Length: 367
Image 1 (cartoon, rainbow, N blue to C red):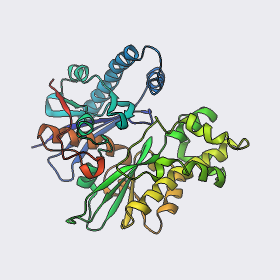
Image 2: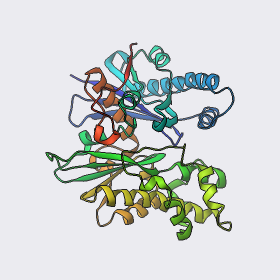
Image 3: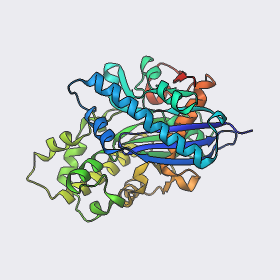
Image 4: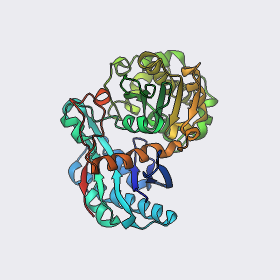
């Protein structure tokens, strides 16, 4: 008998929503369908504006959350149609929501969402608000995906998993059966600065395949200035987002130098993402025998090349080589977290988030 769950993920990159339909009756879970819906320009702009303080925020956030729920529902509808699955066959839908503030230092994180609307529109039980319980227990509320990485990617030898979304995070998976804990934390910027720089200088949402970066030269002086950011040397548990790594942050550092060619800045930013991951791996999980990459950054050829150099001599493998496409991993993780919530099983890893102990994550909105 099938055990169907849907996972929805829209991340820091603000490129859209990934929806995955998974069957957890098998181990590893089988992916029965995946769709990606890009955000309409108006929705993306509204979400991006809410990343910073502004007028009438409460009203704007409430309205955008409703539009977001409808975008999620449209993705779910397409997913079910393509898979030829009825809503009643799905046990629950796990939805991350769209992070607009992440301030664990102040005791809160905000993921815009309208889960009641989503339950109404889809006719499926919705599980949402996964991060708050961990925060209430003294944790960062992030990253949450390492617990699922341990389910999906653990092997007989130690592995590292690198998720390169808007933010890059690292999971260290000890050898199966080891008493060592799984570790995980945010390393620094993933695609967030790359995409912002591409929008500003290319008029494109991202640097496709890293082609523009490939034609630039890494500015070593600028790179070292960027790597001096205190976040990189902060000990885990730690998490970050657009609150730190954004264009104003970059411009503050660029202002120390004579104008740099924009293409060289892109090359430098690409190396920055690779270098902060490589440094985190060397410092916190050097025992890894291989490195698995997932997330949208897995499709940036220049970033992959630079990252392979940073993690050498370990091989760098796409998660696709292990049976899950890079863009599906995070959405699949939130389908799994929804399943864990319904079963009242804990979904966080205190060694990763810093919480006082394991906690059941998520709130249920019945259909």
